Length: 333
Ligand code: TRP
Image (tube, rainbow, N blue to C red; front, side):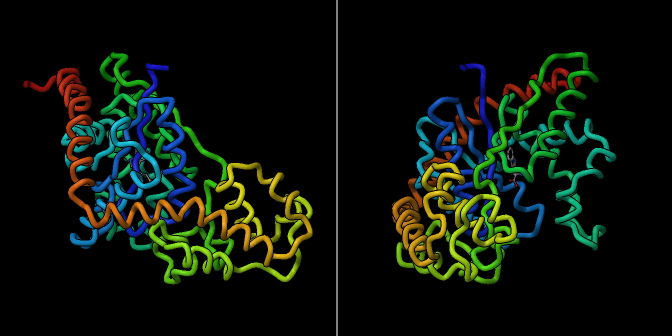
């Protein structure tokens, strides 16, 4: 459908891992064939928590390289980093003057990220969801693929769009729909099946980085935590076995199969056999991505050019929308 426009964003903080791939990037690769898509490396969101400038700089390129290596086609889609398109910050200001403090006070992610010492959190972290709404609305995006944890921010974006339209008596912003991908949206740590796989985990053994080579991938999966029982006979049997459920979920996601189907295939078998098969599967899917990322990392000129051209295309869509917003609000141009 030609009226649909997809927008999604990913933060350039730390290394990309299997959770980012299965939870976000892989889904984007699937969407690009059927929809017009805009994918954004949200560097302005990243600085809501203090970042080392050199590390941030490298991470922006790395995340873009990871997306390209995973199959996001920079010709077919718009791929760029947020800070080079001024519309995001400009619209965010107007939306700051639409969203209410009470709405932001309900955001659970702010509470989690700010922790106990809320007075010390940046104001940027607090208004982060307004910037996210601006990202989406400045393209008048209709669909937003995100993980479960972003659902509340998307509802806020809808509320803001609605409030803007009604305050000014216009039908200007479409209300964006969340698209939550269910399968393996949550990839857990290989060392603790109750914790999310995370770039900030101290143990590198807990995650598979997209830059890991075949030997590292295989080794990490073979050493992944399990339990002494054989593989479960039914999905029901995995409830109390989070590590097992995680590995089976990863297998199902990487092979594009149903979890129940994978459970049936390996029911009653030992972990040595299952982990061997999982390692082969993971290496066959992720190995080429890692190799391509390493190649792109050696050629930052190419990645920079993709982001620059993507930024120009994004700006061409976003700038006129901001102009129209300024007219609606009553600013003099
Ligand atoms: N907040 C999102 C996350 O942490 C990233 C993001 C920023 C985003 N802007 C967006 C996602 C707009 C979708 C649409 O995952």
